[in-house]
Image (cartoon, one colour):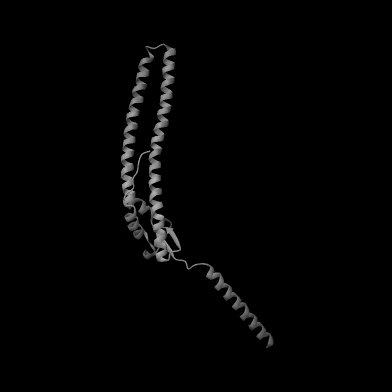
Length: 184
């Protein structure tokens, strides 16, 4: 009978220690509350993103027109070079051909830079929206007690009340109703 009392007492001690240690370990971590945000929706439907997209589209159209005009000029110079081959001395033609090839290389480099500038404008405008959105998300998370915020596109299923997209979008539209995009 004494052995049962000793066993029961030891079991009580172990249980008490486990409960206390769980309580201390548990108190180190905050209560977890998860929120969900649809960044794709914000990056396409916010007023700032829409205004930036319109401006970038206009810039892209201008760049496209410039490239088309330059393409036509390069083709015209190529045709002139081909026509002049029959009337020029071979040495003179070779010099003209090399000049034309250098011009084409420079043109291709400038063309690529212009096309990359559109991608840079898109990335810059996206980053400006996200930079403005970050403090808004922090504020909403603090108000709602959210400790973890997840992107909606990685979530399979969530409760609607976890989604803070509309609140964030509304505040973002108030803080950043328009985004100026400039070609640099």
